[in-house]
Length: 396
Ligand code: ADP
Ligand code: 3PG
Ligand code: MG
Image (cartoon, rainbow, N blue to C red; front, side):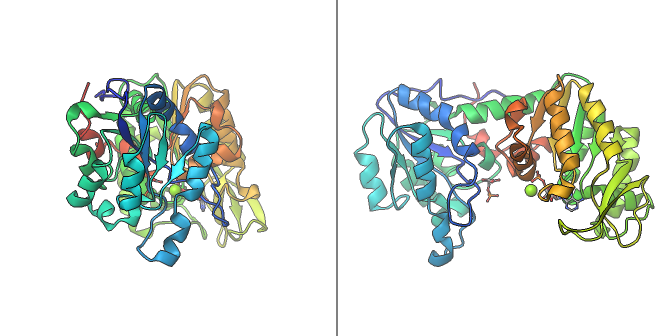
């Protein structure tokens, strides 16, 4: 369902509270490690500025616990600095969210001004969806825009209770959320065939609901990553020291039965003696992992088979690295898949925290049709879930 967008709401002379997802990865020294999410909000921010609005930007960063010392790295200062650099105009960071400093900064806003409030999760009311906190936050602005796709699966105050405080004509989604929803609609609606889903990553338990929802929609669902070994174990193969979720074997067996030949498992494996980057490695053909060895990446024959299927596809959706790509010796399966996607004429969509990180690391993100800014939000969308944060935005 199409939602009211920032195009449809009146912005001239208004203070617009824009909920963004600036929950970016940080380096050890606190610097922003990856500004993809900040850049992804720019179309919305620039549109609102050009329309004569002033901006009050609200985001969470990390998962603060309420302890001032351990929460300090989650202050928004470095994020605001990076925003100022990419936006190319002054950005004022204030040190609270709804306190005196925030109220003062917001009351004096002029068209074109940009304020970044302090980490919204520093307020206990945010996680709880507290109505008093929501009223205080909403009271700072004249209109509300949700451009925080990565947070849409959360029912926190700034996502649900805050927009509810505004008249319906003053609530909208931004261009990033609009784009992410369009892509998901295409994937789950009438995708260009053949459609292939690639699922990998750490745990099958994280992805079972996604696999179940995608199976009826895809021609093939290709498995890689550590979850492979739960499936192989369920089929009765030897899995050595590979990561297996012993409590998910029944579920894996049922899924395999239901999927039939739609679900495709690797045909060879890169195995290692330990998870360490310096470990001895061997390629194992077939599906018996020798005792003492860990399946750590898809093997070269699997990578070529998957690459050929990707080349012939109309649509490819990918979540979950094919191996422990963070270490050079184990990254080749994941890199081959990423490369095959960029060479394919298919509509290529990548989502998930580590998967997006992998394609970014390979320098291939710009060559995909779309790399989602969502981790959990992307996965839950693929599960077919709908979000309260979007229900409160009027349909078009
Ligand atoms: P995403 O965040 O993209 O949804 P996941 O969180 O499910 O992906 O999984 C990513 C992690 O899975 C990566 O950090 C990667 O190192 C790990 N991984 C993938 N394959 C293996 C494997 N065979 N053995 C151990 N870890 C693996
Ligand atoms: C994310 O990075 O997935 C979002 O910003 C949500 O963060 P959260 O998992 O801490 O709620
Ligand atoms: Mg992850």
